[in-house]
Image (cartoon, rainbow, N blue to C red; front, side):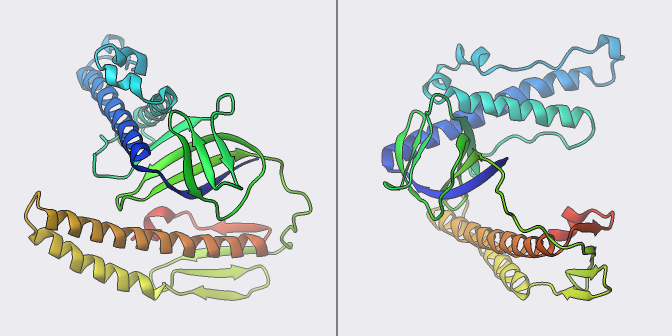
Amino acid sequence: MFKAYKYRIYPNKEQKEFLEKTFGCVRFYWNKALEIKLSVFRENTGKPREERKPIPEVLPASLKKDYPFLKEVDSLALANAQLSLEKAFKEFLKGKKGMPKFKRKKARQSYTTNNVSNSIRVDFEEGTIRLPKIGEVKVKLHRTFSGIVKSVTIERTTTGKYFASILVEGQLQENIQLPTDKICGIDLGLKDFAVIVDSEGNIQKISHPKWITKIEKRIGREQRKLSRKQEGSKNREKQRIKLARLHEKLRNQREDFLHKLSKAIISENQAVVVEGLNVKGLLYN
């Protein structure tokens, strides 16, 4: 069984510089490889199938000769970026998802690396995590885990915070209390966030959280302030960070609300039935 644990990390100045270099190289590889793929894809548009060129796999090694700075960062970060791009582009070609987007410098940044020969280690006593090519980084370990560390994803949010999501392989917990034989149906709506009806006929209405509207109004005000700031000024950057923090707060509170609600539902029911709507779209509108 795989489970991810997310912790906030506190890199020092030198470590931040290396993380930013890695983010930059991963972003550069993604954008360059995507540019090459899209060039061939557009060239194939309108041609008979037998005349189309195969979409190339752009290996990180093939770019390192022309762009030697790619050699300075964790090679597994680039390898994982390649795997992610290949998967995203294949799903695009199959019509399952939209066209992969180019990565922006000011957006959320992340990269994933793998645990090879114990290159990733967590020390709960010292409060550190060892990362490839970086070394020991301070981390806030608010909970422990046991198992084999498979990989770690390092993220920098738009507000400048750093996080490590550690993927751990462990044994399935025994003596887990299973839910009862109850079954429930969930109807997502506009008036109420959701209406839950169980197999015994009990109806539970989940209201829309009031804090969503309150934060969205603040976001609207701060967005208008941002639009009035001069492009490239320090005041605009300060306002951008302030707005990003509000978006981050809304996202965190929404995820917390959904996590607690879903945990309560699955702990009380053996099966859950949901209507066939665009649930993701409803949740974020």
